[in-house]
Image (cartoon, rainbow, N blue to C red):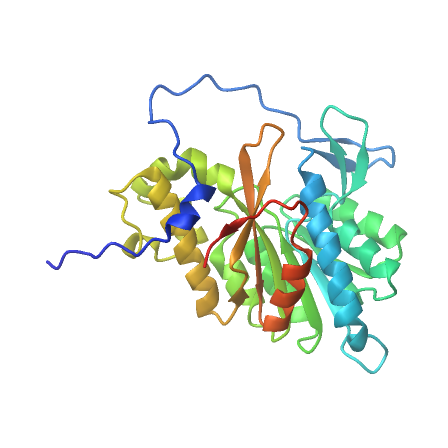
Length: 309
């Protein structure tokens, strides 16, 4: 049998995935945190960490720059319009944990920003596996004047329903923000990429991969099979966890390029209150002009980010 060659690895990628302690005795499980509570309007709102500021700031900035430069050209009754698609929308309202700060959730952030500069999305599609959260998001968006099309269910299923109803000639922006890798099935991205004018902001759970990489690579049915199909032929699991994690992300980016999606060469790392890595924010688009916009707005701080080129 021919020995499998080790995939080439860009060492710069590894800094996203610092070495983790060797597996040992599992720590005692922490008490499950409450993720939702009832808002003053009677619907659920989500309890989130302060890092939501960074996630939503980049979303708002991209909605703004793309609206000023491109989306306004698609508006008007004779044009195809523009849509916003949020497949993990939650209830569209959040509270920062341990504070009284209430903020709009991602679909409301996108809608409000599009309205603020006069380039509103013609339609906003929201979806969540929890029907109660989907309904809450739809109600809150309609109060703000949005035309909302809600679809409750797992994203891998609702993406098909949404694609059947969107205008294929419109300009589309999708926002994917799942809690774990398994929920970010690559087929979701593959299906969205069939639209000719599609930009996608993707939050990938670095925290999930950092905590579980060794368990995932030895499982016969692994969450990685959905997130990065074909990884078993591309990743050398005999190497360190740091190398394995970096190889997985390098291969995931190649999969994006293989479905004709241009990808940003820079990873934006969203960290928690103690600087622990939480999410890797990826950007992919069918048109390279979108990458130019992303490069202009991705920096929230002057610190350089990590190249994935």
